[in-house]
Image (tube, rainbow, N blue to C red; front, side, top):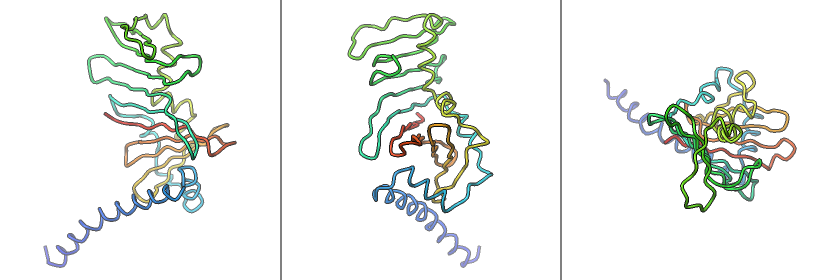
Length: 220
């Protein structure tokens, strides 16, 4: 390799990480300046066109056998975490756990868990602050509880927001972030990710754009 090519290669090794860091800092400064995700994506949509080659199906079909989702709601001033869902299929049998931090949809705060024992699904509920061992019920005896726990899973959450590969428009934000945008009758939804990995979903009420629901995905 010639000296000129070596110098170009060395410069590239420095420039690529520098540009990525600069892009991330720029994105961070947008938020520090008061931009929220909804406003950021409004600017992106007004100044760029969507990329038809971007396919959201890779984000919908989460390839992970262990992950957790933190659910919160809020506005520009405050944010409140109200539920945490986790899925663990790394062992012999999958475990789904939902921790509700406030009463929602008729279900009391506490821990709900679906587990597989002796070739059957069981579900349990432990109230907040309880020190007693949870009582297991056959899943078929508590279908609404099981359905509610599973509604917080990644795929069911997205299904509830009417995501569709044909309607979700894909954008590249600052060259490093992927963003997919779609709406339904009540909400505008923004799914963010880094490379092939989804990280956050923001769902804004169309009639009140400042109010949102945020789902944070953690693979672990």
